[in-house]
Length: 313
Image 1: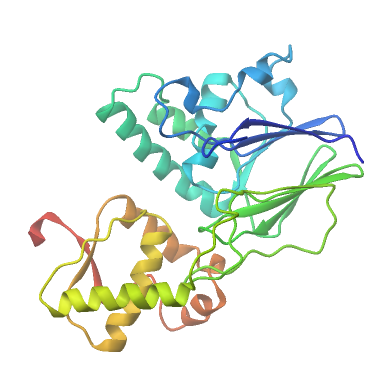
Image 2: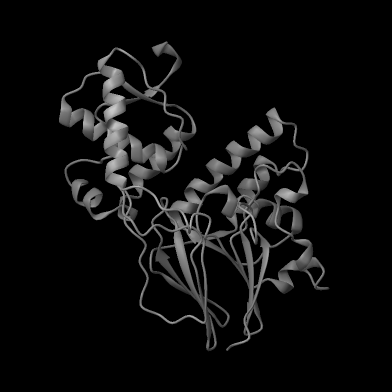
């Protein structure tokens, strides 16, 4: 077995602040750099003290940082790593991830600082400086950092989510972060070349969860929404602004069109609206149906859904 050392700096036995340090072939690779959103002090960041305890600077120790996707438990501590700890080496993520990361980071910073008074949070300027150091990668693109070979694969899950194949000499790993093997209404399923890595590192938060059929859950959801609207009621759906919001918008927009419903549908302005603009742009990251439909219509240009603004009240 090759001498590959794996050190979780976060998310080793809990959910949040995903950050895995892999040492192989004399190189040190950081896989994700997430934040624990529920923690109110330095514990929200990965254990960066482990790196400083090696007796060398962070740039001397780390060879490359790879970010799998834009969720904060996988990327939230990146500005702290670069602007506070001082890492200036290579950082890679996909194009959609680089586009959307600043939106989530700034939104969380505002909540933490302006509403909760967090004094350990990075600034807006630090977010922008951090993101300027990131090199975006395309789907299935290969890149080398010295003798480190990296290839990007499609992970599903959210727009821009990636899996990474990393090889140093004869030693190799595959890292997934979150991934989804079941395609949904806007994303495809995860895919990777046939390979035999020495180590496979994967997200396992819901590994033992058995869920009902997605089709059944969608049918029950639409039935309840339709029943409420038919009775003159209103339906309020609290949902994540990125990924789940767009998925539900496509589901409801298609259903409304099919059933000929006229009740208005709104989604909140702000983060959801900004994120949807990127979903309109990165069509090549969507599933095959969305890409084929794009010739006639962008599915994120909803026919029956509008942005909620104050004047509607």
